[in-house]
Image (cartoon, rainbow, N blue to C red; front, side, top):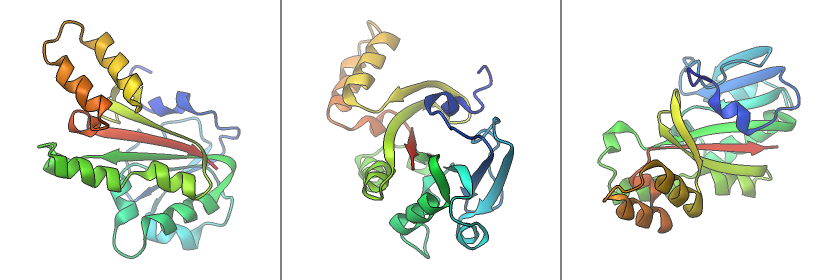
Amino acid sequence: MEDGLGNWQWLVQVPNAGDAMVLTATQDSPDWVIAGGFARVSRRNIDDAWSTAGAGAFDCVAVPDADVLFAPGGSAESRLAEVRRLLRPDGCYIGIEAIHPSEASRSLRAVLRARRRSQAPRLRRLGFRDVHSYFVVQSPAAPRHIVPSTPAALVAWDAAMSPGDERSWQRRLLYRLGLAALVLRNRLVIARR
């Protein structure tokens, strides 16, 4: 897709593309999260979604900023459990984890905070299956590359993208040590109920 909209959609097959929901801290949400392919897309505040939607109501639930899962008023686990309840069997969850511009110094502290807030382990504990994590190069709205977040995939991607770069050994070392968030800013997490 030239414009980047919905680029994640080729990574997961949604058996029924009827209803989708985007959860945010406000009613506003970026259009790129669920760019098309769904008959109906609703946008809801994360705190209101639980009372306004029934179990198994959606084929896809997207959270464009995972920080809303950690907002006061509930735990990330309880909010992700509610997301799972809202999904139909085989429905998909899409979440974006970002190190925000205020943390753009990419300090080790910001990376450790991002690790503590990682959705993938929580999703697995809650019974989601086919949990996959990818780094999104550039921005989630217009990704230049979507790379699996395993050290081997990141090292291979870096080698292909920057042959002969004299600083590449530093990046590759960080990837091997599990510190890719010092280099790459956005992570896409996809899971299936």
